[in-house]
Length: 152
Ligand SMILES: *[C@@H]1O[C@H](CO)[C@@H](O)[C@H](O)[C@H]1NC(C)=O
Ligand SMILES: *[C@@H]1O[C@H](CO)[C@@H](O)[C@H](O)[C@H]1NC(C)=O
Ligand SMILES: *[C@@H]1O[C@H](CO)[C@@H](O)[C@H](O)[C@H]1NC(C)=O
Ligand SMILES: *[C@@H]1O[C@H](CO)[C@@H](O)[C@H](O)[C@H]1NC(C)=O
Ligand SMILES: [Cu+2]
Image (cartoon, rainbow, N blue to C red):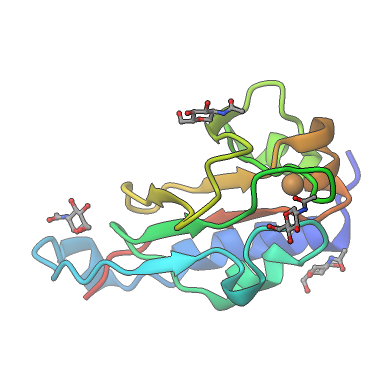
C-alpha cells in the first residue's frame, strides 16, 4: 500500500500527539473542566476543498471539548455534506466508508451546527464527510484526526 506525503504526515502527527503527553498527564485525573467549543474549519466551516489536515494540526483537542460542524443543508446550488466516524487509520487513509458510522446527516450541520463531544482521552477520532461515496473525503480533503489530550 502506497502512502502519500499527506498520509504519512497524518501518521507522524498522530504519533506525535501521543508522545507529547507528558508524564504528569498520566496522573492528572482531577483536571479542570474547561471544555471548549471548536468550530471545525473555523470560519471556513465544513466544506469541500479546505485542507482540514492542516487545520487539525494547528488545533489542540482536549477531552470534553465539543466539535461543531457547520454546513448548509443541500439545495439546488449547494452540495450536501455529512459527518462520519471511520473505524481505524487504514479506512481513514483510504477514505473507505464501508465500516464508517454516520454521526450527522446532510441536514444536521445547519443553524448552530452539529455538536460532537470528544469524550475519550487519547482516542483517535477519524472524521470524514461521507458524501459522494468518499469523494469529498478523498478529493475534497474533508477529513481529519482528533486525538483529545487531558487539559490541565
Ligand atoms: C493538505 O495539507 C497537508 C499538510 O501540509 C499536505 O501534506 C497535503 O498535501 C495537503 N493536501 C492538499 C490536497 O493540498
Ligand atoms: C465537562 O463539560 C462538558 C460540557 O459542558 C460536559 O459535557 C462534560 O460532561 C463535563 N465533564 C466533566 C468530567 O464534568
Ligand atoms: C442554497 O443555500 C445557500 C447557502 O445557504 C444560499 O446562499 C442559496 O441562496 C440557496 N439557494 C437556493 C436555490 O435556495
Ligand atoms: C437528519 O437527522 C435529523 C435528526 O435526527 C432528522 O430529523 C432528519 O430527518 C434527517 N434528515 C435526513 C435527510 O435524513
Ligand atoms: Cu462533503
